[in-house]
Image 1: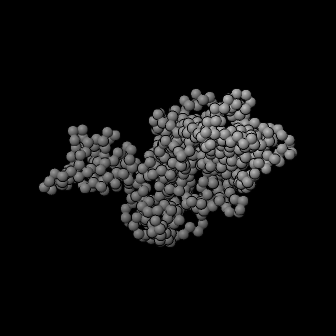
Image 2: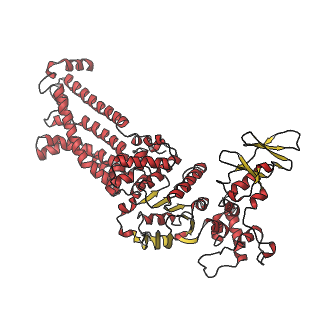
Image 3: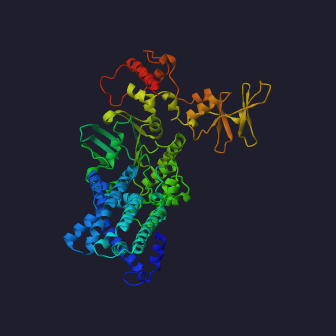
Length: 225
Length: 398
């Protein structure tokens, strides 16, 4: 059996077509987990990052923290959370938020710090207050960097959300882990492929967003003229 | 009126940017702060809108200490233009210009209507309104910067080296535009530059600063060029300041020889087309009828310097006066152009300690050397010899 037959077995198996173990349901669970994790990470990291980037205070600390956070073993964190909080949504969410927050934090800090100092000076000089400068000038200017941060965070979270299954929760990780446990490698391969497709899809979505959703003056590669 | 009263700035690390300056910036006129980099001119300008807080003394705006005003509110009432324009990259031109009216609470429609007026006022085409700053040339960006500063019609305009980053041709155009705007709007302008040429061109009064914001000389441009306070100022003014002074005198003072009175000067004859536009000079003594370019000037718009330049360039030594349509209205020889200068005293009336040539003549204009009458002003001969050596040094260093 090669992996192509595994995949055709997996996708043609009626077991994957309806019910709680259906592909649609597992994908939905997976996206829901990922979205929730990203939401919490955003609420935690972005405002803090914008503030740090604007004031310039604590930038060194952020860099050090983000570097250290990257070294956190996700699986270890899952185990730790389960031991502390038991098997529930939190057990899967905590490590995912820990994964998504650092790139968002760094992106927010760097994005705001990347605002043209002349533009900031002019904004202050014509009478914008500090919150207005941050909101009306620095945030749009940080948008491309911030979007890139979201892309990194999203792709990583989608790829890593498989660990939810490790602690008995849903998502595409179910296929991978259950398949391994029951030696049904077709299921494992199918689940893995779906995770890859989701991650690649997210990557594409963000590429489109950065090309079309930003105002022309804030699109990457158009500045420094 | 802006008034600096002992305004000084000492940085936390102890370095002194400005030691303590007293200066009045009169209402409705252009005052230019000029000096080498590090003389504190930008610091002084930024004290007015509280982008820099003085560590000693104070700055008064129409009698009120600016320190008592809320910074954001104060700044909305003062136009601010900086070197790189500092336009908001994500906003269209029209919304960049509408920034301050929007901050003042105007609705979007009214603010944009006002912005469209300003776009026209600064000489930009209406179709630029929808562009983003990165789609404009440097000169256009700078014009948008000026429009944004003027949008809420502030009485005071602060301009920090606004034209330094564009090429000389564009810069001259922007300077003309500012002079035209100022003749219509009569703002109280405080302008900072390191370019003395720009300073004498734009300023009603020019303040030459040296390190720590000390005033080396405060004078109108003509006085500055003809009677620098000391050798330091003379060196800063650079070469040819006598000739450059011609650039401050209107060419309308030149007495023209009417076209009807003849177009011949010696062998040279000016050829005109049917519309009386000059075609060129023809040398009647030469075998061929080759045309030599005829340089012209516009008496109503140009300066004596342009007129003299045209006369020097002409093979006949004669500048052609033109009207707005390029038609010849008269001619003026080099002598006629120079005759437009104020009459000099007869040679015997020159001051006794005969100093050489042009410098002596300048001084003989009778303008006081220093306004403050500081004691210990060196004698004329000492000043001159040192001025010469300094000027040479400055020229050699270029």
